Length: 239
Ligand code: PGA
Image (cartoon, rainbow, N blue to C red; front, side):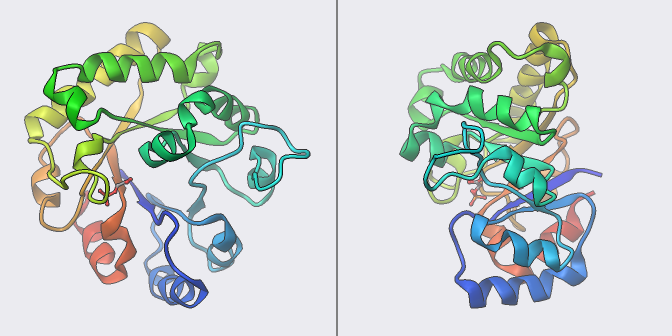
């Protein structure tokens, strides 16, 4: 089964979150994970929904106002966390912290889902592979290769994300060859078989086409995961 990650970002007030939970809890599937705002983690977990984190502190527990650390997530039963989402790289200087965040997650036995992807300009000047390689090198620096084998990678071309890009999904050939490039690079330099997800405007109009790609291990879904009826349809169409 492929992974499907719902990235709810900073959406929903409590009433909307509860409405969402009420609908989705009857649909809970092992391969579908919900990256929810921190403040609603308990509400989701208590309703039996597979809940993961959208981010983590680069620090251990201590005097770091506003942060949520990996050991706290673990104590809540969280076993996966997104890290390095492009919105965090752009708005919160996450490039500086991703390596430490991955270390904290691995120390606490939480699977990092590392997001990488090029912006439109980098793609236009054919720098996609350089950018992806740099993001991988920075993220994995100084980490024992044996420990890295758990890491999941989400390839999200920034220009195809519905809210920050143009919302256009790359062709299947483009996605497939970039994913293969990532898998080969990770195998060669870090010696593990990475699972690689695709993210960027995944919705019901493109999913049947995306499902023809044979090296994608799942999807990271933003906008479409917010509408529970749409998301329910989407998950049922993924093999
Ligand atoms: P999107 O978002 O599905 O709305 O393009 C994906 C993401 O930002 O992870």
